[in-house]
Amino acid sequence: MGNIKLDFEKPIIELQEKMNELERFSDEQNIDVQSEINNMEEKITTLKKEIYSNLTPWQKVQVARHPDRPYTIDYINEITTDFVELHGDRIHKDDRAIIGGFAKIDGQKVMIIGSQKGRDTKTNVECNFGCAHPEGYRKALRLMKLADKFNIPIVTFIDTKGAYAGLASEERHIAEAIAVNLRECFNISVPIISIVVGEGGSGGALGIGIGNRILILEHAYYSVISPEGCAAILWKDRAFSDQAAAALKITGKDLIDLELADEIIQEPIGGAHSNKTEAAKFVKSAILKHLKELKFLTSDAIKSDRYKKFRQMGRFDGEIN
Image (cartoon, rainbow, N blue to C red; front, side, top):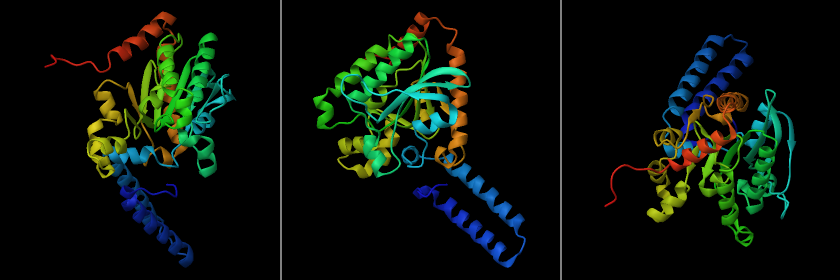
C-alpha cells in the first residue's frame, strides 16, 4: 500500500502496523516468529478481500481518485513496446492532459490515447489535473484519424473528472471540440476499445470514449456528473456526495446492469494502486481479448457495431405519461 491511506483502509493499516512491529521484534531479539508473521499476512489479505469486495459507490470513487493509482503513461510503460508519442492538435498547441501515440501490445500495433494526471504539483499543473482543453480533444481526434488511415486499432484510457471548464476552454470552444469527437468517432473504421481506468467524468470522458467496447476497472467509475456536483445541485450540500454516488449508478456493476459497459476488469486485491504491474496485466489481457474478437469484422461492421451500441443506450420500456 502507498503513503496515502483511505478511511476504510484503517483496519488493514492497523494489522499492517502490528505485523511490522512483530518483524522488528523478531530482528531485534533474534527470535523466529515467521509462523506468526505468515498468519498476520493471511489475515491482512483476507481483510483486504473482504473490504474491497464490499465497497460502497462513494468508496469506489475514493479509490478511483487515489493519487497512487496507475495513469495512462503507467499502463503504456507496463503493457506496450515501441511507444512513439505524438504531440499537438495542429491548430493551437499540445495539451498534456491527453497523451497518445503508436505502440505495440504483444506485437499488435495500436494507437493509444488517454487522459493523463500528474503525481505532484508541478506535473499536475502541466497536465491541468487531467482536465483537457479543446486542443486535447482535437489532438485525440487527429490521432484517431491517423490510426484509421493506417488501419490500426485504437485503445483509449479514460481517467478525468471532466473537460476543463474555465474561460480558456470556452474561448477555444470546448463544447464544439467534444461534439465533433462524438460525431467523428462513429466514422472511424477501425476497432476502438475504451477503458475507464479511474475517473470517467461527463463529456470530458465521453470525448475519447466512443468505443466498440466499453470496459471499466473494478474500482473505477463512469458518470454524467461527479457525486459532489450532483449533491450540490440536488441537496445544495456536498456532504451528501455518498448518497449522490449511490443514486447515480456509476460503478462497474451498475454499468453492466444498465448495459452501458461490456466488461469489468479485475483489479489486484487492495485496488490498482496497490500493485500497478498486476493491474496492468489484467488490462492488457482484456485489451488483447477484445481486439481478437473485433479484428475479423469489416470496416462497415465495425462502424455499425459502434453506432448500434450507442443508439441502444438510454432506451426504456413503457409509455411516457
